[in-house]
Image 1 (cartoon, protein in one colour):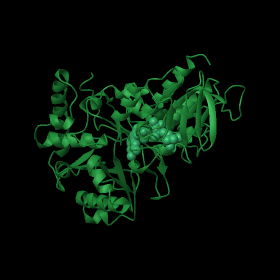
Image 2: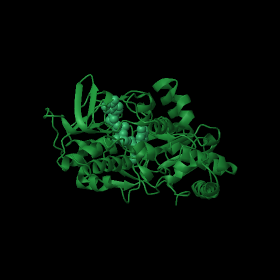
Image 3: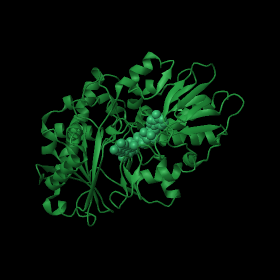
Image 4: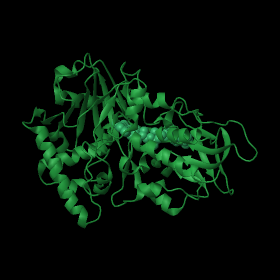
Length: 437
Ligand SMILES: Cc1cc2nc3c(=O)[nH]c(=O)nc-3n(C[C@H](O)[C@H](O)[C@H](O)COP(=O)(O)OP(=O)(O)OC[C@H]3O[C@@H](n4cnc5c(N)ncnc54)[C@H](O)[C@@H]3O)c2cc1C
């Protein structure tokens, strides 16, 4: 879900998407466009929207056959909108997608993280949610004390006692990793805020907002040549598009894996930043039920499972007949090894353990989603390697005023969210607009 269930800064203290850019398909005298945007996810759509609204000639190249990237609502698999990627509007008080949703007539609702049933090995824990949140606060205080004197550390190592360990596991689950790999510094940098959900799914909203941006889908970029002064050549099986500048929004793990060859290679500091942004695992298993489970709290978390290294989050959409089981980090990796069938079986077991066989028997269809296997995302969202503070910021810095990097990985306090991706794309566009054409 790309969220801290509570995003506390304990160490650190709209319409642009819909603006139709002037996309140029033919060649002009010297270059084909002012800017090529690589990737038609939220960051790419936002960058292209802002550049186009300012009158710049933009070409957007997207590998997949659709826009939206990791924001994608699947309406077919379960017969109800199921967000295979982003779902929650984090930091709802400042999240511009809320106003966009309202403008399109989509309702939004708060999804409070503390509306949570806390179990221990399947049995409800008296005052479970209160105990877990107070342990989370205590863990964050401990981490803050360690953070002001020391270097980066894994959040899990600051935990004292079972409840704090379970709180660290829950934090790590939301950050697509394990508690003993979750950078306390990275976690602390993220902004805290309320979560909302949007009617029809967040992926649907992104697709509708981005629909006005002309995007060349099915265009896999394989090479970015910036040897020529004052221009960049972006190439793939589709041919070559020449522009003055390029905005690369491809997720860092994909770039680190060499999917796009840069010529000349990227500077060493950029390569180090890429290597420090690893693909995290946040895997969802969606279950279609016969009716919404409105009598159960929105979230269920079993601290017994978490302490055994098998953390699973359960999210119940209050308005839809839909239950989603979430696995993360190394547990998700282990479960995913058996493919979709194994994932669904593990999800069904987690659902049964949490709510009983009678609820599990109400499932009619299941689907799972693991973005690590996707060559165009290389994971769900990035996990900062321990001790590599600064890598997100370093990754986002332009090279030679010609290569711009944007996306959720380089989005400061809103990193690893759609809102951050949008802000990062808009920031890259603003930086380009400040330069001569
Ligand atoms: C399971 C999951 C749950 C999440 N939950 C939430 C949530 O609840 N709330 C939230 O705010 N965020 C959530 N996120 C994170 C959110 O989805 C991302 O932060 C956001 O969508 C990233 O947008 P982006 O444009 O930076 O990257 P992307 O969406 O990945 O866009 C990059 C684009 O580049 C394209 N591309 C890749 N390689 C190439 C190539 N060689 N040539 C051309 N194009 C290429 C890709 O196809 C893609 O469309 C979640 C993510 C996942 C996976």
